[in-house]
Length: 323
Length: 290
Image (tube, one colour):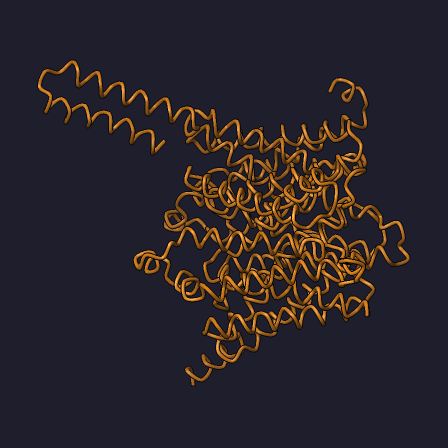
């Protein structure tokens, strides 16, 4: 790790991955609460044809162009998903599956076209499939890191509004907020972080950076602000771990390592999480049981004691379930 | 001749997926297919490492184990209070990542590259032939997929009534004493089997397209399950043929073209289905207004 920090180039790449993880984690919190986690997966797969078309049209590998192409394709994909699920009897999940696979297939067809054509060296486009943080140039890091930072700032500024539409959109509408516009903003932010994250994690797995840190953070807290910060931190840690480990071992793509790091954090959280983790649930259950036993022993009248003790033990258990 | 084998393999893949996909989309589990087709990857990689060959039986077994593991883990997370789609996302990305890491780390020992994982190598599948006692019996993939299709047809034929009832009214099915959970796992097992048999030909991700798109198109064209299964298979086979033609003309990925062809057929069904299509709805509304 220290060696890496001495290399200025790698330092920037590490910095970029951390920012990307941060942005994904923060936006992921809201998309998790809005129950649109898998939309990130759809958007990421759908970005592939956009990247290919941007390359075919211009013939240069420029990260800004790819971002624009990918974002356009992702927007088209979310429009198609809405169109299909609203104007036919196909359900939302099937519509997402259709859009994901058709867009990805178009991307694959275009990519093989590029590989077989005079562009020759396929321009490192296949790096986009699993991500290769080490192939980022300084300019890429600036662009991607800046994007991620901007997204995090927008989330900070719109925190109150996003909180409202995450928990009670109807109430928000009643208060006079334009919830539809806010929802589109959130979708746009998801698109931006996913598209930006593709360079580091790849098309196939970038959704994990959006989903897994948020789910992991949920185990530690019931407060949205804490959860957002935690998810951002988990995302940043996964991005850093992915870049660090994959830069040391040749042939290891960055994406899967980042995803596994995020999954490890998720596993730890599921076991040890203070609010909803497995261990804290077990402890709570044991405490409730002991309390119940104690109350029953200390009270002479077995019948009343059982009723009273049962009541308080149950109230503890219920608290555990809600928390 | 090579065109014939590719089309035959493509059609077999499409048929396996088209049949299972009908039950998946009726039960609103379309994305479970997506999850399973990603999650079988570590199973395939481990079977490869242990057996040292592309022995299909090992791969089937390994994939089935991981397919079940994925379904089980998703259920576990859901019961632990994680939202349904998020638990799906956590599980399948993690398993897919493990598979990719296993393959990248053992790239020298595994004759399986990551491009193949993603979009298959249907053009090469035909050269890997099965020979018994010196007699050439055709590509291995054809036998494997034929076997998978036979199992799927047998199970669906034997338990058609049960699958039908569970697809439309699982509560009633449970009340009538049908073991709903068992059939759920049977369906998931078949999906794992289909994913791994198709894996070499169309890759882990495009399997999803063939699992979801033809059944969805068929769902727009009919209201009867039996007819839906038939139309779904027909659309799958037509996409395989058209996709091969398009790929040959464009010099592009065959599996990708097949899924694109399926997408095109879905778009046609979406627009022009006589009963559930977009145009029919517009016309009906127009007539009602007039």
